[in-house]
Image 1: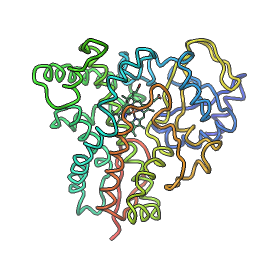
Image 2 (image 1 turned 60 degrees about the vertical axis):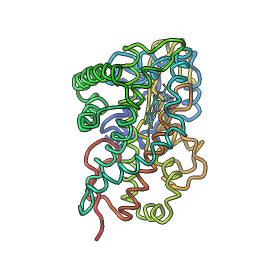
Image 3 (image 1 turned 45 degrees about the horizontal axis):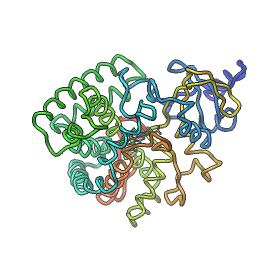
Length: 394
Ligand code: HEM
């Protein structure tokens, strides 16, 4: 029996649609095939993983759930399984109306204009990292993909950059190891919280020109943020800001390494890179899905859900919904309209999208300008943090 048959066989033995959906680890290797089956056979289905959840796969239903904050809550967390902590990540795990004030307070740090100011430093960092790869016939691009966001965002937040290697190790343990061994993620989360506690204390006494120092001074509804709020905001920024963008740089390079025509087109005309980035975000999003919790009994696409049940919004499936995207499984770098859901679409829409877009655009522009031709040197998955070995043809 093939994997697909095994997954749909479960559905036949029960009276509500079931599909053994997973959106982490090795499951990402075949997730796009899963979406095809789910969208045609069971657009809303139940999976027993991670305590059990409904998966919603159509573009229209994902949008509807995102906008219906009366019926669907982000508590206890959008992150399933958790990032090693039971504390709410702020603002991700906060429902309206409290959400609104947190977002208003954070938005000025991430405006388009503010993020433009980071572009020259991003370029400088990208070039320094590329210098390390120069002269290597086979280069591991994974380090480049990870360190551009780590350095750019770490500096902006006010993290001591001599600890950059440590940050990446923690992100690995929190984001990637959590589905294999939860205790690894818990330990790393504790370590990050301890680190942040010391850093926040340091910045209180010795502020710098960075986000953490500015957050300590910000007015939040007539008061200052307390230490616990600061911790939960900084923890979210730390995890959300590093791994996601790194994943997009990686998957973009992975695609280009196997599509010489796409690579040649971007090398010949780098002004196409921002449009291509949107397509990479759509088709190979690093965040394939996030969770909500049903607040009151409801129904989606004829499937009844009870209060307390978890619902997973498969952004990656919505991005490949044939009702919205022509030939959704093709990667077309010049796709004219691209209303993807990779940054979310509702009250919690990603606050870092301006930053992420700039980081990916600069990273790809610099990489392609330095290495206009490259190919995969060994099979590598599109996702994850493992080696991405690229060879430059002689
Ligand atoms: C390619 C990179 C990224 C992707 C794909 C991504 C994706 C997402 C998604 C899907 C959400 C949840 C949206 C929802 O449920 O409606 C989110 C929220 C968030 N992201 Fe990102 N993100 C990326 C980069 C970043 C960066 C660089 C930052 C750093 C500032 C960041 C900060 C946040 C924050 C603070 C939230 C919570 C917003 C809220 O709850 O109101 N993200 N992101």
